[in-house]
Image (tube, rainbow, N blue to C red; front, side, top):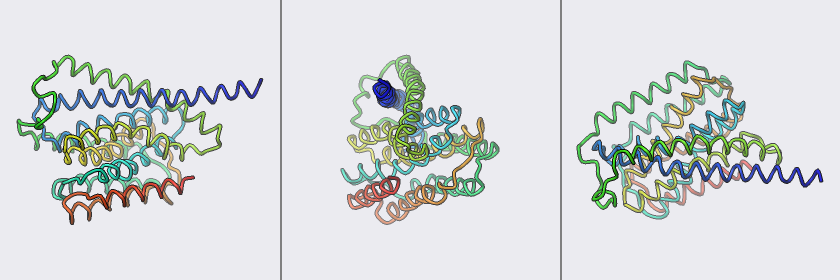
Length: 319
């Protein structure tokens, strides 16, 4: 009788995770669809849309999950989700897309964004060595991203942000419907993140897995699904700039806004384990993009094999 009730509670935890992920994916898709259409109305270039609107929209699940985890007293899930998502964005998502087709983008187009991600990663490593992420650092991170967003929006508007071949060009959605998509997506993300966190914590406790590992794997991959969906859509429409911009922009948002906002509201401790393994891996995945884009003007299938293989090897170290 007792075993049956216990199994039932574990089954409910898995259902909560599955339902939360479903809402996260659905909410992310709705948010990206609405935000992308709104950006096109403003005349933003595909790369700018990928670096800002799509990247920030698909990273809202990470923000929702991280804020919920921090307020519910699970900082390891929060930081694991951010670090794991950044690793998954490059190793899993960019690796899979590079395997499917070559991606064309020069280092010159994204050098500043990569520099920001590297700087944020190194700063986070210093905080991890200190063992704490203080409120002033969180505020600094947020202001950095806000300043970057204002800069790129003011410098990339060209009045012709729509892409050839987009299905919604001839029949644009009414502005009210676009705003409804955005609002509905945000609502689904908020509810889905709450379900996901509760289920993930219960599963972690049942199997004796640390919350940090849950954040680095299950939470990270789960909240990266919107990035994967939008990247595959960009690949289908042959928008390499949108795709790579989405990946790099998402990593920027995770570092500077997700960690920044969480730290500004609720300063958190950092596990020393992050500095020994996960943060150096996150930094290495970012740094490897520099020679790839500089020497090749984009990615090739061999780079996809390298990135995906490195991601699988990293996941095996967590088991």
